[in-house]
Image 1 (tube, rainbow, N blue to C red):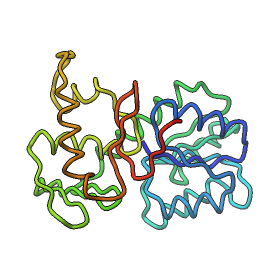
Image 2 (cartoon, rainbow, N blue to C red):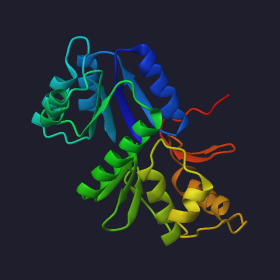
Image 3 (tube, rainbow, N blue to C red):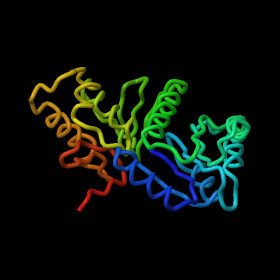
Image 4 (cartoon, helix red, strand yellow):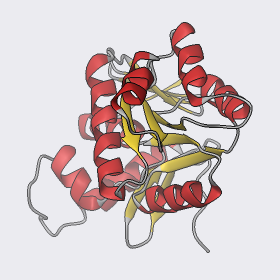
Length: 229
C-alpha cells in the first residue's frame, strides 16, 4: 500500500515508517497539518494515518477538508484521547477508524489492511496507472506512453497484480497464489520467465523502469524504487 503518515511526534512517526516499510509498504511522512493536507490533496494514497493533534492544522480539520472535496481516501486517526466522545467526534468528522495511543503495531497493521480492503470493495476500478504505464481493465489492454502493449492473458494478470500493489514488495508465494492460483510452490522458474517477458514488453524501451527485483524478497512495481545498497 501507499500510505501517508501525518504525525508530529517524530519518535512515533519514525517507528511507524520503519515498521511499515519493513512490511513492504510505500510510506510518506509529514510532521505538519497544513503540509500533510497538501500532500493528501496532491497524492494518491491507499490510506492516510492522521494524528489528531498537529501543528498548524488539527487532524479533524484535515479530514473534514478532504471530505468536503469529495476525497474518500480511508483515514485512520491516531490520538491519545481515548474517551468515547473523542472517538465519536473523530468518526463523525469523516475518519474511517480511530486508534488510541499507545497501540500495538499488529493492531495498526490489521486496521490498515481492513481499510484498504474496504476501499477496494467500495470503489469500482476501471483503470490502473503508474507513471506512463496504464491498464484499461474493461478492455484488458495495457499502454505505455499511449502505445499499446500486447500481453498474453497470464502476463496481463501478473501486471495487474503488480500495479494493484504499487510500491509494495510482492513475494513469489503471493504471485503463485493470486496469479497462478497455486497453493503450493511447483519449484519451477515460471515466475522468473513471466517477469522477464513482462520486463521486455513494458520496460525495455521505456523510462522510468518500473519492475524491480528485491533480492531474497520478491518484486516491486514502482516508478521511484531505490534498491538497498
